[in-house]
Image (cartoon, rainbow, N blue to C red; front, side, top):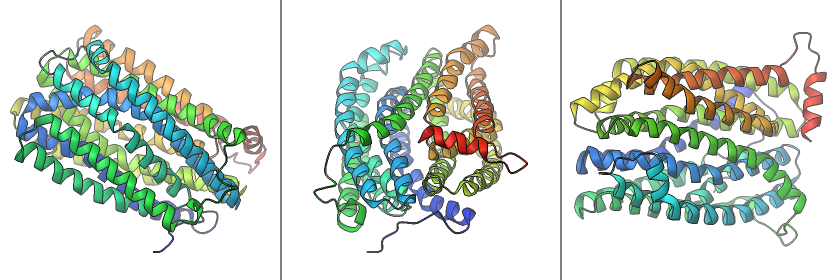
Length: 459
C-alpha cells in the first residue's frame, strides 16, 4: 500500500494546502454524517421530540469529547514539527507518548460524563419530556468516548505526517456502517434513540480498529522500536503544553454552547428541534473551515520545524483567500436553500420555517467564522498555545452574555438565538485577526525580527 506522507516544506503552498484539504474535508464531512445520520433517521422515523432529545445532549457530549481531542491535536502539531525537522526518532516518541495520554484521558472524562449526565442536562433546563432519552444518549456517547478519541488521535498523527487520505478511507467505511446500523436498529428493530446511539458507538469502534491496524502495518512512523517505546517527561510536557490549552479552548467552546443551549431549551421542544436541525447543518458548514485549519496547522508546523518562515506567511495569505471563496459559496446556499436543508431532518412546517430563518441569519457571519479557523491553524502550527485558550475565553464570554442580551433584554425573542451566534463569531474573528497581527504579522519592510523573536519564545 502506498505511503501517503507528504513533506510540505517545499513546493507550491496552495497546492499542498488544497491537496491535503480535499481528502481531509471529505473525511470531516463523513465524520459529521455520524451525527447527521442519527438526527435524520431519528427525526423522520421517531419524531421531532426524539430529534430534540438528541440535540439537547449534543453540547454535553461535545464537552467531554473536546477535553480529549485537544490533547491528540496538540500531539499531532508536535509530531508535524519534528517531521519538518526530519527528526524521525522524536516523531516516533511523540506518537507513543501521545497515545499513552490518549488511553487515559478518555476513560477519566468518559466516566465523569456518564455519572454526571442527568445533573448536567437538568442544569441546562432540558425539557422534562425529553430528559430520559437525552440522558440515555449522553451516556452512550460517553461509553464510546475512548473509541472516537483514539481514532482522532491516530488521524491527527497521520495528518501531521501529511497523510490525509488514510483517515478518510476508514471514516467512509465506519460512516456507511453507522448508517446501515441506524436503519437496522431504529427502523427495522424499532429501538428508537437507543438504537441510534448503539450504532454510533459500534461504528466508532470499527474506525479506531481499522485505522490503528493500518497505521501500525503500513506507516513507518508507527513501527515503533524498543527505544521509541519509553515515557518521556519532556515529550509529555511539550504535548500537554500545547494540547491542554487546545483542550481548554474546545471545552470552553463546548461550555459556551451549553450556555446557548440553555437559552434555547427555555423556548420549548419546537425551538429545540429547529435549533438542533440548524446546528447539524452548520456542523457541515464548519467542515471546510476546520479542514483548512488542520491543513494550515500541518503546513505551518512542518515549515516552522524546518525554519522556513516565509512559507508560514504565504500559507496564511493563501488560506484567507481560500476561506473567502468558501464563505461566499456557503452564504448563497444558506440564503436560498435553507428551508430545503432543514426539511431533511423534520416534516413539521413550523420547525422547518424557524430553522430556515436561523440559517439565513447565521450565514451572514460566515466570513468571520472562517477567519477564526485560518488564524487558529497558523498560530497552532507555530506552537502558539496561548491563542487557543484566549479565543475560547472570548467565545465563552460572548455565549453567556449576548444570547441573554438579544433574546431577553432587547426583546428579539427566538431570532436572537441565531443572531447571537453570528455576533460571537464576529467578535472571535476580530480578536483572532488582532492576535495574528500583533504576534506574527509580516512587516511591510520585510523585517522578520518580530517573527523570529516569537518563534524563539515558543521553542
